[in-house]
Image (tube, protein in one colour):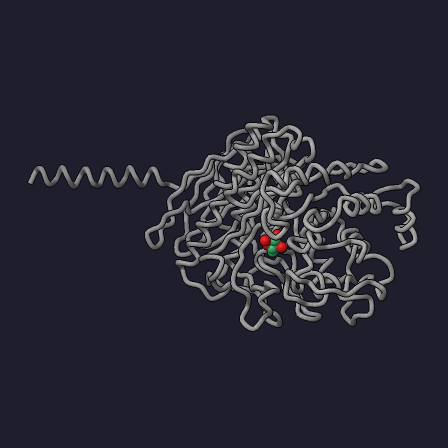
Length: 518
Ligand code: AHR
């Protein structure tokens, strides 16, 4: 009897010890942050794919849809609202078969061709260099142009840069002026090919490195424009590609950034799963695979650190996001998918990861901006839908150019079907006005979590405001002609006491808490 009592007591003690260990707690150091979260982490990607450009951005000057010089007004307004810092264009795989001279001059004289990568549809080149640059100017964001290294020539790439950025006397600047643009544009971010290990030419890392050096040599800085050249980097765990690019100093001299692509695929590349019709296992798989972004970034960064310990070269995650099966009845080559609360969690997790790695990550671009993959905006003729992912960008814009704050997070796990992942994900920053922002995800779709937040540093602080994105169902989404089911709401379940907070994080939610000095 005595023995049994001892055993029971030990079990109870062990359980309470475990419970203490798995208490949900975040410590935010409000004073020792040193790395800036580049606003370019909040970047976007628009490819000539499906209805991203045509119908999404560009409707043409004669369209009944309200537009400015052919660009949709509703889309521009929505993008300005979330302060998008940049857009990467024209691809993607499309970039390595895009010949920019087809997209300049009078629109009715531009050649029509087949978009062989995406849906086999006619590309009439009506959206080209001038239209893209005008779009960026209307939105107030920076262009990120991906040059054609796969099937274009060195001369073609060199001339595109000259056409865009040079103020000198040259045939390219004369051509630009003839096409209606007197002054050169400023273009900082320049991609040296896209996925050249795959659709961009199926190259080996060694062959790509040689090509990259050759193309990069002729990417010149004209008239005060300074390029930030982004070499095509690896996908998820293609570490050998990163190693080859980074180890040779002659390679490293040819770029300022190197890209990384990683998509969240719920199942596998053949059956990716439905964007809206999924169960809890698929929710779990999606979250668990998204969290792998942290592993890939950490390991790719470790390779970069070996050769660039001063972190001069940026990691540019210029394609990421959820990739599901296309919506039934839509063109498989158009990659059109709906966007649910699950996508909001995936966006927030990735953005928190990027914030926490901001010492190395200098840019990230979700794929893709409109009507393709994990879109922030969907359009249907003259209608527009802001997706749950859009609201994450609206909530997280407070981190742009803010200083990242160190955090220490301990939390319980979310367990499902034999698997287990941390239930909470977070990042924090302090902006130029001294406002502190903590963004948090409760990944568990079934359980509200009580999180204590200890604030280390200058006090006192108080909660200025808080916001939440959540919904009743995991697969809630916003649709055309219906009231929004997922959006940004005020959040009040946060209590402050001296230098600590208690936050009740509802199941399957993204929360932002803003703290100000008293
Ligand atoms: O975003 C869709 C495609 O995914 C891009 O064109 C390509 O770079 C990647 O494989």
